[in-house]
Structure formats: structure tokens, C-alpha cells
Image (tube, rainbow, N blue to C red):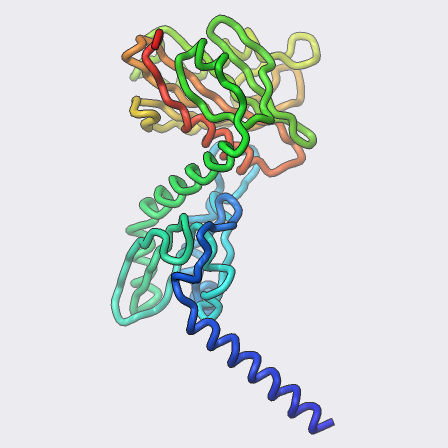
Length: 332
């Protein structure tokens, strides 16, 4: 028994040594050309001691905070933690990596495509946990923006693998838009189009409509946007039961921000919809684009009904679809 035990330990030692040599010889030219990671995931390379303390708490609070506008809490990013010793391997294939360690100086650096393509590798270091926390606090917004931009781009690449014919949209609204082929046209009116994709136990929808120029005021933008979307719901989006129409959920205040899409000034509104006189509800994301050249306000909105599913990635696909929009001069 003693001889067998010694042999087992010897074999285990040589196995660890082989793994260590393999890790040490890991070179960039042998790295993956494409990251296989799921959408909205981050590989956090950090030792257990830091991960289980204040630094780990800060990372979770910042990068796994609840997504705005969803009816149930879902994290902004899914975090996968790996100790520094296990840095090489699968974790380096992630599109988004945060590498945190104690070092002789405080440092923050973003390296693109360091271990895979495409990729954001975020390097953060400090002499103490407090210094690392300071670096995190200073650069969190920048990191999140960088990662979300990459994830939107990646989602758009996936969408383009199989595209719907959008000539009807181009003709009506003078825009180019990337929409997966699984979507179908369910309604077309003079200034309104509704597309829907069926999923297990639900569906996701994209609606496009245009409004007269200057119908959304700067002073009462949120009020005007919600009033217009509710009027659209009353006109076109009805439930199967009588007198059921889509409206904005009044119990939850929507999240509103200013942004830019396709080079145009835009407003983003996230919130929850409900079917009046029914039990159906879900999240929506609404973008109002100010198309001065064509003297109109263009609205693109995504919403989903998926009562038994997580909704973060469903809504993220809709956001990526909307942000693929390119506007043209009407008549061209």
C-alpha cells in the first residue's frame, strides 16, 4: 500500500509539473482567434483571498449589479472567477477579462485582443486592497462602457449570420436594420411595423414607428415618450381578450438617459409594460432618434414576454438589433 501511495503521489507531482510547464510556455501566437464566451460574461482573474473580501464585494456590486428596467433582478454581467495561478487556459478565451492582483504599484490598463480576438483585458493592481478599490472606483464606468460596446458588436455579428429581408422596412422608413431571420412581420401600417420572434413560452418583439418632428419636447421628454408609446399600444398592440391593450407599467418609474445612435441625438427609455385588463407583462427598451434631415422622430422599441425565462439576454439582442440602425435620406 505504501509503494502504491508513493507512486500515486509521484504521478500527481509530474502531472502538476507538466501543467505548470504548459502554462509557462503559453504564448500569444497560440491563442484562440475568436472568443467562444457567452454574451455578457466576464472572467475575473483574482486570488481567492481578494475575491472573498472587499475587493470581490466591490466587483460584484459594480459588474453584477441589476440590469435596469427588468422586472426581476438579473446581473449586468455574469462573473466567472479564476485564481491567478489558473489564469492560462479557458479563462483567457473570454471576450472580457479583469485581471486583479497585488503589486508594487497601482496600475490600470486596458489591452485589446491580448489573449484572444475580440477581447478586452483589464489589468488592475495595487499595493493593498484599498489601492485596488480606488482604481476600481475610478475606472468602473469606463470599463463597463468598453465591455458593453464589445458585447453589442459581438451580438450584431451573431445576428448577421442569418438576416431577415428588411426591404419593407427600408421602403417605409428609409433605414437599414439587422434583424435575425427568425423574426416575422406581424403588422404593417402607414407609419408602423411590428416584428415578432416566437421563443419557448413567450416571444420577443420589435416595433418601429415615426412621429412628426418636434413632437417630443426637451422639457417633458419622458412624459411625451411614454404618452406616445401608450397611444401606439392602444392603436396596434392588443391582447387576445377584449379591451386588452399594451400600456406602460405605472407602478415602476422608467429609466431615462440621453445617448447617440447612428450619429443622431437620441433618448433611451427602459421600463416595464403590461397588458391592460390582462396579466401579461414584461420589459421594454425604447429609443427615440431625432432625424433632423428627414424632419421626423424615429422610434425603435424592443419588448419581450417570457414569464418563465431570464430576460437580460433577450433584451440585449433587441438592443443590439436597434443599435444596428443606419438612417438614409428619404427618397434615396
